[in-house]
Image (cartoon, rainbow, N blue to C red; front, side, top):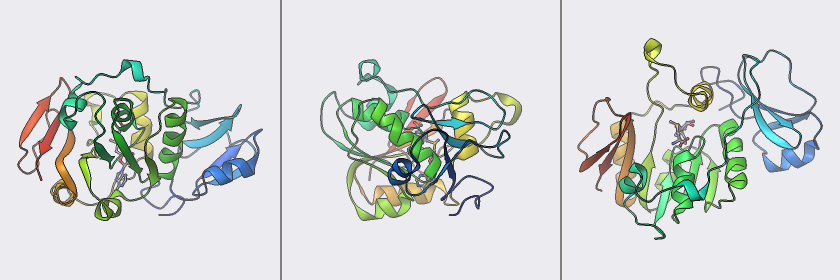
Length: 240
Ligand SMILES: C[S@@+](CC[C@H](N)C(=O)[O-])C[C@H]1O[C@@H](n2cnc3c(N)ncnc32)[C@H](O)[C@@H]1O
């Protein structure tokens, strides 16, 4: 992976503009990015990272205001949510969960706030940097937040639950995703492996469950043991 080698997505060495911030601090914090002094050019070809007033933010390509993911508030999460039920734990139990496609971490950090021991993995260095900051602003401490290909990470260990959440296919004109998801679509790196391969790989390294998040209307992959449906999304649960 290099600066823009995957369908124009920002990769390793993507610029991180430190407008009025110390470059070395941000270089040390995110060595996979290219921290540099100055402000970004007015028109960016892809969303870019900027340190503004000491905060890491994402500058979009359309000139709209800078954005960063909101903190996750522990008091707002519920052990009765679809995700918590799919992951199969009641409040406070310390199950080990791998969120293998962490994105902005809304799912993984929710599970962390509920008391799970969570490892988050995200392939895009730009998304990973914002995820690290989001966990910190949420005062949540996952066991790890790695920028890596989770295919290889999965092969290294065992977890009680492995959560898979590949990008949903784009919906064309059918409905525009919300801003966080639109930005993720511009940044997220998607590998070529198919869902069945991911389920098989995760099943070898999950002690209890593999949970696959899907759009509710999408085709079922393989043979889930059961499904939990919401209005727009669905969790397919596989037993290893
Ligand atoms: C749909 S998003 C996940 C959204 C996430 N559940 C949330 O709550 O924000 C999928 C993410 O998986 C990442 N991804 C895709 N393939 C990956 C891989 N092989 N290893 C790690 N992350 C991967 C993408 O870069 C993208 O950010």
